Length: 213
Image 1: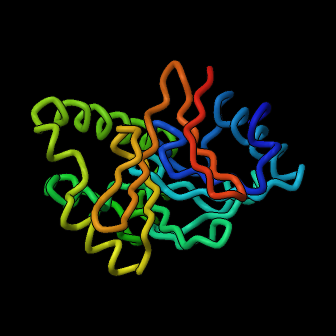
Image 2 (image 1 turned 180 degrees about the vertical axis):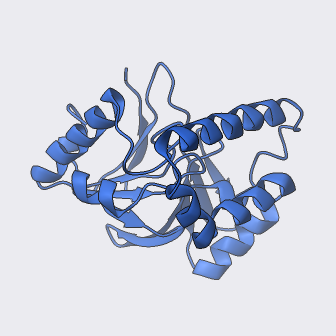
């Protein structure tokens, strides 16, 4: 945010900015720090966009307004220097994880989200911690292949949106996959001791940037 993003035309955050999100009314030093950093960026004229992840899908308009960013739908087509690109978080491409997809369908119901957000903040936090603990436990017993994208579904997604390039996160397996006959799937990496940032310039050059958080 401080050293690289100010030089960009636009910044796209493809979800899981936070480990979990229980509502825009939550406040913490970390949340406030992130808001300030994004706000500083948008005030400098850099357009910021956010696509919900599986951990922070409850981020809403209040957060967006506080930061000056724009919320994007599950799938977003963008024109990147003349090339049509499809952006998504990536969890919707992992259809082999049937249990997760069933869970995702449930928690993305608007009525359930509204009901959850009406609960006291402390209760929401307890529920979120239980869900997160269960998710971490479930991952131990899932095959690695199940938690990755389904190749056939990815190909259908290329065709459905009529694009040659998809950029997503979620699986944490940073790579640029060339898929015959002419498709490219770019995967953002995990954020740990280093950051995973994808940079695209006006010449169409694509590269991963890494740096200390």
